[in-house]
Image 1 (spheres, protein in one colour):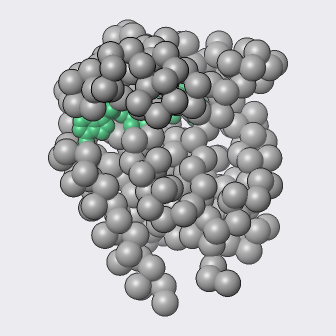
Image 2 (image 1 turned 180 degrees about the vertical axis):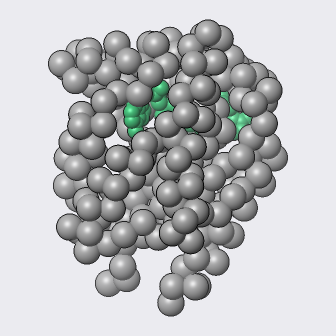
Length: 224
Ligand code: AP5
C-alpha cells in the first residue's frame, strides 16, 4: 500500500480552507479533519467539550492546545484516516504542529505538505460576512460567490443554512488578529522544514482547487 498522505491547509479565517479541504478530500480520497467542524459538532451535541469550545470560539480565541490535540488524536484513530488526511484549521499553534508531528510519527507517517492559501484581508471580511453554513453537515455557501439553489437551504441535504456566531464583524477582526499572532509562527515552522507551498486563494474556487491539486501532484512526484 502507498504511504498515507498528510496535508495541512493553512490560511487566515475565510481563506477558503474548508471549501477547498472538502473538494480535495473527495478528489484525493483522503479524510477531511477540521477542528472547527469537530468543535461545532460537539456544540450541536451539547457535550462538555462543545460547551468549553464555545466559550473560546464566540470570542474569536483559540481553544486550549491540550483539548484540541486530544480531540485530533482521537479522530486519527478512525478508519477513514488510513489513506491520509487533509487537516483544515489544525495545527494553529507551534505546540499543535509539534504534537501533530508526534502523532503522525506514531502512525508511521509525517506531514508531507503544508499549503498556505493567501488572501488579502479586505477579501476575507467580505467572504465571512456572506458565508452561510449548513446546519446538518457544515457544507459551505456564500450569498454572492457560491449561492445555494434555494435560498436558506443546503443543496446537499436540504438542511437550514445559518450564519456562524463567530462571523460577526468584531469577532472576525479578533480571529484575524489571533491568526497572525498564533498561527503565523506555524507558517514559519513548515517553511523552515521545506514543506510550505503558497497558493493564491483570491482566484475563483475552481482555479484554487486546480492549483492545490497541482501542488499535491508535484509533491507526490517529488516523493516517489
Ligand atoms: P474554524 O472553523 O477553523 O474557522 P477559521 O480557521 O477561522 O476558518 P473559517 O472556517 O472561518 O474559513 P475557511 O478558511 O475555512 O473559509 P471557507 O472555506 O469557509 O475555527 C473556528 C474557531 O474554532 C476558531 O476561531 C477557534 O476558536 C476554534 N478552533 C478551530 N481549530 C482550532 C485549533 N486547531 N486550535 C484552537 N482552536 C481552534 O470560506 C469562507 C467563505 O468564502 C465561504 O462563504 C465560501 O463560500 C467563500 N469562498 C471560499 N473560497 C472562495 C473563493 N475562491 N472565491 C470566493 N468566495 C470563496
